[in-house]
Length: 184
Image 1 (cartoon, rainbow, N blue to C red):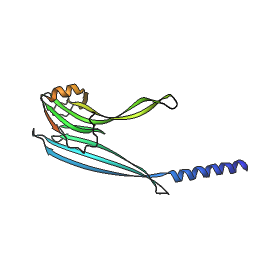
Image 2 (image 1 turned 135 degrees about the vertical axis):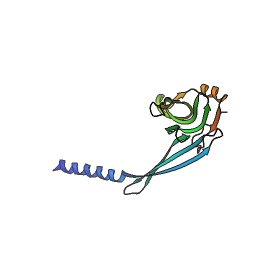
Image 3 (image 1 turned 90 degrees about the horizontal axis):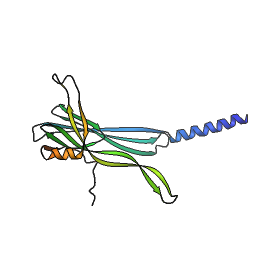
Image 4 (image 1 turned 180 degrees about the vertical axis):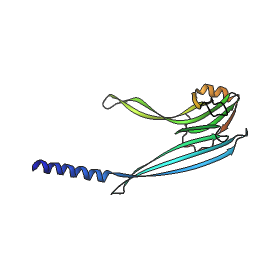
């Protein structure tokens, strides 16, 4: 009988903790679309989906926090060129005779070592950095674009800068949620 009472007390305690700490999530998605004609005559469509997730306690209705994330989808000339990297924020298109490039900002996560001066130990710390990234559009579709594949490949900042001097760079409308501060 003593074992069963202890079991019921533990079970009741765990149940109360789960019920109090349990959350219900509300997700709100907002889609905004922008469309414009570029100076080179191409039609640009930018679609941004903002997602806000808020967690509330089931019984306490306490707000345990809200997270915000977004994703972009871009189409040029009714989808002849599409970019859907998701979490990156597009900044510029570079239209060249030999291809199309995109410049975007992205949050990248790194593990770095940090020294704890109190304990004189080294700990691993997750660091998120906002960085410039560049990609080139590769279109290997053929036969009225029914077969083959179109995709984006990463390129260096130097390759993008070399082509920027020779090509037409167009700004992509965005909400500037990601920025890189200038270092003095």
